[in-house]
Image 1 (cartoon, rainbow, N blue to C red):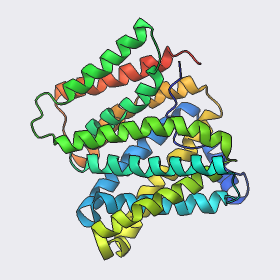
Image 2: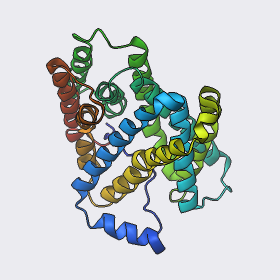
Image 3: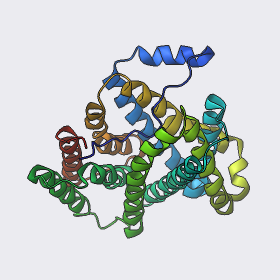
Image 4: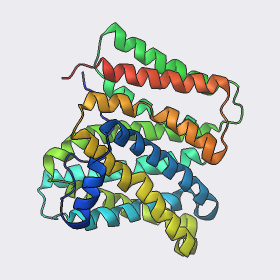
Length: 302
């Protein structure tokens, strides 16, 4: 069975020269579990910050800004070569399209439902990858636990928009595809060059949607500054932290730590956005966290 990997980038660390080397040493001094948790917190704070932009540029415009700035940073850092083979380009293109769709679906979801609920539903994607093909009764138990959690999410919440739930499910499907494509990207491209090219492609694909949705509002100075902050918090910082952590801890341990993400998302939604979940919804989030952690902890590598 496939171990659940929820890392969002390629396999190799950033080149260690100049300021990058200094940043690498600073990150390396932090214990790996703290790196993973800091990365999770950064992603969710970035999502909460992104939600603040929805009133000005909409969810599509916010995604366009995030992907654009993330692409610029990654292209500058990695300086990728465009001389890739046909198969490598196919993987990069597939990865970029999935990356763009995943971000767009997720931002459309959190525009309509609370952050914690959206992330919990989205987390079904990596959980499905972890459980795929297993016939063990224990893995069936994890699947039932997660399914029960998702059912409980909607209990007593008549304010949940069906469209938001469907977008979150779409993001889950994209995340599962993203994980499967990550391995192929790591094999077909060097360092983070493939990721940089895929991110640039995702930005190019989503940008027209964001421009049509938001127009010149995307060029407001304060919007650009917040958009850069979203890109750094949601992409650049967690990518770096997760990569560094994966160099020092087993993927299975990494996966268990990442299973805390729905819970962190719910807490960030409460503290930053004032999104209150009822007791039943908190139990639902904890069920999905437990299912994810359990599936990862007991996974058998294929």
